[in-house]
Length: 266
Picture 1 (cartoon, rainbow, N blue to C red):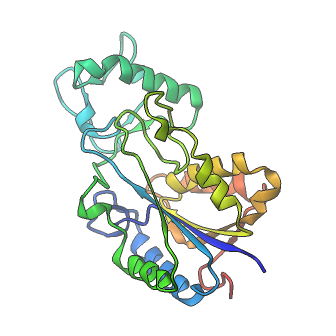
Picture 2: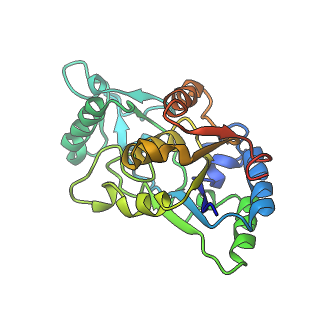
């Protein structure tokens, strides 16, 4: 009999509530569908992993970190590339001059790893805030699943102020002073034990994309066929829809399948 798990990436209010700090268009409906699916399939899902973005106010991807020559902070969604920070034409510098060298090293390493340029996000999913909580409709479904005497595996990420942490299994740039930014091999091992891995989350353009890509690169190609993407319970950040398309174009040829929440295990 197949062992089935659900991997839910960042199903938090700041992403999923229309009043959230970084609302992903349509995410509240994603959560309704995911909750309905979990209640329908709760006897067939053996494990659940839920990742949680967990940021601080001061963070390298928040406006407070950066200023221009006039002391202005960048607007939300401002891209900051290497040339915007390093060199004679640099537009942005660290607000705290003590962080300047580290900031320059960070944008250089982002450029080297080729995943993303730095993007300035609205402060979101701040530790202890209401916006960091799991969307209530999905949280209720998780609690209902736990009533079978099971435990949801909650995985936090993003508390290191010096690096982005889109992927649940490693930060975009490793901080050698913080092992939690390195590869979470144990989480990958636990997920890999399953035969079917249902994938859901916000946002499909960023945290879902990078989490699944990183896990797949550690799994080995034969295991990627375990991935089942629930396309109606995941949405991209507005303006970044092309990244969801890129994600699917990379993963489907490698073996990931796509379905909808009403068809999964039906």
